Image 1: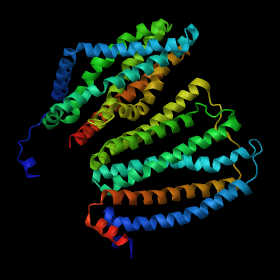
Image 2 (image 1 turned 30 degrees about the vertical axis):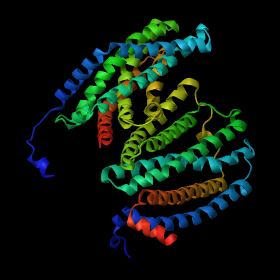
Image 3 (image 1 turned 180 degrees about the vertical axis):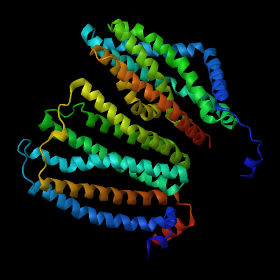
Length: 235
Length: 249
């Protein structure tokens, strides 16, 4: 432990680390725009499959709409999760990131934020258009988009834990789904519940508050758990 | 020997815990069998037939202890995971690993017996009732934990990664439970509630308690047998395990 004592005491605050990671991951993501487009297309295709499967009855589609859009959002989020760490892990960048003097949870928070900006936000923007196909009216579209806006960052945060735990494992993708989808259940319930509450005339305040609370709790806890998982994977 | 004169950390070593686990397994198995026999006899033979549900209600003597144990074992498992992460203790990780299959088994039994009871009582094997749904998700959490362990070849990494997962799951279990309950009440209102059931006869309660302790002691006994197997498998290259294998041969 003498090495630690000899190190100069560099007091690094967390925020520059977050900003650095966001900038880097955004730049990398924007260099492969096609990949981002594919994720969005996946979301649209999944949503399109449901009317083909259950029939085009407008009342049925209107009832199913919020749930279908949310389940598709969960799957799209799941599909994009390996991008979060896998490439950096494969070429050794993640090891260097873990060695940097910035706190690892801060760097991971930045990576998660960039991941949400490139995968979650486009999904939120596209969702009202897809919801129109399910016959949701304008107030329901707003409720859906608001729920997705508060819920999708939580999906990225929780997903980061799973992505870090499954780094470099066989059958990582299927395993990731098994680990993470049960943890997504509360977000799905309250997210789809936002639109249901709007329909029932209850207002969306309660559901959106719960989604916001989940986001805050996940924003604090998930980077710490992900950092622990990344360190385990790098050992 | 007083409580303080025993060095409890001695049993954190797999080598010294190995014979203790054998004794514990034997004693808890010896306790579990008569408790289960008495509980089943009271529950299936002595307890009166329910006025509303007939004899179908008797499945609760299996169902309720299994459901309780499924949740309790997850908490115990998460606690061992926390110990293994903070103290970096191998045996704690082995205990968590040994508990997971038993917890998953009780979850399956609770779901299965619940479905069998649901057919005569509710007229359907499966309803998206809040308890059933969260029990099913608990099963997925157990299976995810075991799958993650199996996917990692390095046992120490498997210990720590699955411990992180179990702790994240333990934080989520109450959230999942309450969100599922909320979701269910919004959609259809409480159709059937166990708390509104008629007050239980005391003979039934005694039978239920006996079965619960039987399930508990069974879980301890099985976990001890399993942890012995895990210890031997993992410590097979150590000299004490070699001596043991030599003596057995």
